[in-house]
Length: 361
Picture 1 (cartoon, rainbow, N blue to C red):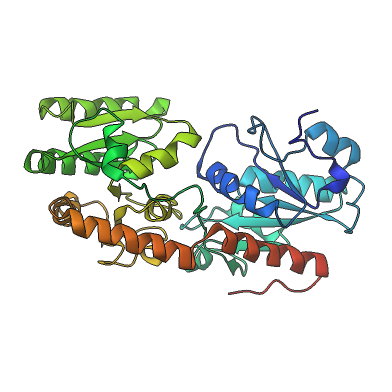
Picture 2: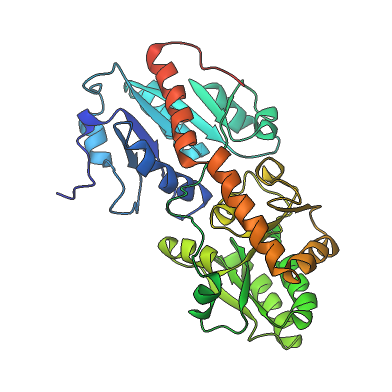
C-alpha cells in the first residue's frame, strides 16, 4: 500500500480537493498539508492527488466514514470550493456521516444565492482577507494565506540561476499564472514591449497554463511579441510542473502580478519569499501583502502605463531591486509564514471539536 494512504480511523481532518484541474486551491492545499501533518491527523480526498500527499480514498470513506475517528466525536471536512462544500453537506445531512464543515472563501465578489446557501450550512467559515469577509452572508474568521519559506527562498546567485536558462541577458522578469485577460498577461506583454528595448540586460518569461478558451488570446500575445522583434527576449513557457515553479522564482529578479481582479493571489507572497521585487495591481489581497515602495510597488489595475513606470525604476536600478527583494523576504518571514496559517486553521478546527464559537475577526 502507498505510504501516503491513511487509515480513516486515524484521520481527524479531511481536506476536500474534488476538482481534477490544478488551480490556486490546489496550490494552497499543497503548501499547507506538509505543515498541517506535523500537528494534525489530516488527509486529502479527491481525484489525481499527488502520491506524496497524505490521502484517503472514496472507498475507505464510504466504508468506514460512518465511524468517528479514534479520539474525536466527528471529523472536520474542510472545503474550499462549492463542489467540496456541497459534497460535505450531502455526507453530513443525507448520509448522516459524523463530520463538521469548514469552508475557506477567497473570492471578492457578491456571491450567488446558491453559494450563500452553501455558506449558511457550514459550521465555520474562513475568509482570506477582510475584503473577502465583507462579501460573506455569515461571520467569518479572517486567516491570510501563508507561504512555505523553506520551499520559496532566494537564490545565492540569482544571475547564475538566470544563466542556467540559456535565455539572453543577466536578469529575468516574469509573470506567473494562467494566460488570460483576468490575469493581465496582455498588460505585462505590452509593458515588456516598451521596456525591454531600453534595458538590454533583461529578458522576460510568461509561465502559466493556456486553457482551450484562451488559445486565441495567447496567439494574439505571441503575434504582438513577434511584431516587436522580441521573440528571443519574451519567452512563453506554458504550464510548468509545480515542483519547478520555486526554481523560476529564484531565477527572475522582478515578478509582475498585473491582475485586473483577483480573489487572494499567492504569487506576490511566493515572489517575496523568493527574494524578488514585486510590482502588483491593487486587487485581491495585494495591499495587505506588499509594503508599497518597500517590498515592491502597488499600482492601479488595467493600466499599462501604471506598470511601466515602477518597472522602469526597478529595471534601471539592480541594487534597489535587490533591496526590495530582501525586504520582501523578511516581511513574509515575519507575517505570512505557512506555519502561522496552519496554526490559525488548527484553532478553527479546535473550536469545532470543543463545541465553542469560532472566534470571528
